[in-house]
Image: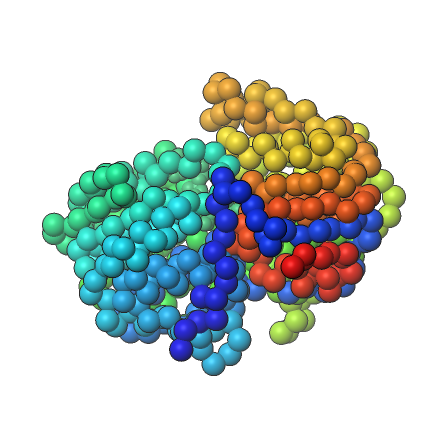
Length: 462
Ligand code: EPU
C-alpha cells in the first residue's frame, strides 16, 4: 500500500507561472473563530523519515501530516528502495529500509529543485550503500541558502564530494570516521547533517556551535530510540559516539509550533479566537512572550490527552514592538512573516530585524501594496548587529500601524510568506486572489478546509 501522502500535488516552484487551479480567493473582514489541529512538525517529520534509512528494520512515525514535503521525501526514499506505507492509525507512516541497496539516479533527479531535504540523505546513504547522488536542491527562496557547512562536515567525516552539473556525487571510500566540527553558524540543517552522519561513524564526533531547535531535539530523540549515543551539553556542544548498528524506531512527531504560531497570528490580525489543538507551550515560549507583548491573549490547555493553546484578540489596540529573529531559543525566523502581518494592525512603530535569512522581508512589498506602511532598511535596526549588517541586504523593517488593508492579487514567493498573505487577505476589506498556493501545501496540511472551518470566506475556483 502506498502512503496517502504520496497523492499530494507537486508544489509549484516560485518561478513557475501559476495556473488558475493554484489559486484561492479570500474575502476578508471575518474574524477567524473556532478550532484547528496541528500535527507533526514539517521541520521534523521529513528528517525523521530520513533517519529511518539508518535502521536495520522498519520504523513507525506517527502524527505525520499530509503536506507535500512528506510526499517529496517519500518519493526520494522510494527511489532508494525504502518501502513507505500508511500504518494502522491516521497519520502513521511505516518506513522499511530492509531492501535499500541502490540509488535510482533518474528517479532521484526527478525530485530536483523540490526541497532541501535531499542533502540530509548523504550520511545515511554513505553508511548504507557507500555513495549518494543529490540533485539540485529547492526550498523557499528567502536567501542564498548555501550548503557549504554540510559539505565541509561530510568531508571532515572522510567523504569525497564531487560537484557535477546534474548534482552532487558523494562517495565514502572507507567507513566514515567521527570528527570535530565547529559550525560557523548554528545552522539547523548542518546540525542535522552531522547527527545523521555521526551516529554510525566510527568513534566520537564533537559538534560545536550546534543548533538546538525543538525539532533537532526531537530528531535526537528519534536517533536515541534507534540505538544512537548522543549527549547534548551546554553551550551548543553535542557529543555523538558512533555505533555499529541502529534499529527501527517508533516515534510520535512533535507538533508543528510554526503552523501553530501562524494560526495565532491569524487570530490576532483578524480579531479572532482560535484554539490550536496539539500546540505545546514549551517549544513556543518565545513566541508566546511576543504574542502577549503585542497585546494578544492566550490560554494553555494541558489536560491529559487534550493539549492545545487558545489564541485570541482581546479587543482594544495592539501594541507595536521591536523584534529580532534568531536561532533557538530566540524568536524563530519562520514566525516572523505571519507576525509582521499582525504588526500592521498594531498601534505605533514596530521594528523587525531578521538575522537568519538575508532576504526574508521581500514579501512585505505585497503588504505595502495592500495599504500597509512598511519601510525596509539595510541597517541592523533595533537589535544586535548581525551577519547581514554590512552586506547590503534589506533585512530590517519598520512597520507603522494600524493600517487598513485592502484586497489585491497576490503571488506567493515562499511557504511562510504564502500563509502570511492569506492572513493579510483575511484581515483586508474585499476579495483577494492568492496565486501559487501549492507552495503553502509544503507545510500547512489541509489549510483550505481549516480556514473554512474557522469561518473564513475562501473559495478554490475550479
Ligand atoms: N547556512 C549557510 N551554509 C550552510 C547552511 C546554512 O550559510 O551550509 C546559513 C543559511 O544561509 C541561513 C542560516 O545558515 O542564513 C540558517 O540556515 P539553516 O541551515 O539553519 O536553515 P535550514 O536547515 O536550511 C531549516 C528550516 C527552515 C528554517 C531554518 C531556521 C527545514 C526543512 N527548514 O532550514 O524552515 O527557517 O531551519 O530555523 O527544516 C520554513 O519552515 O519555512 C523554513 C524555511
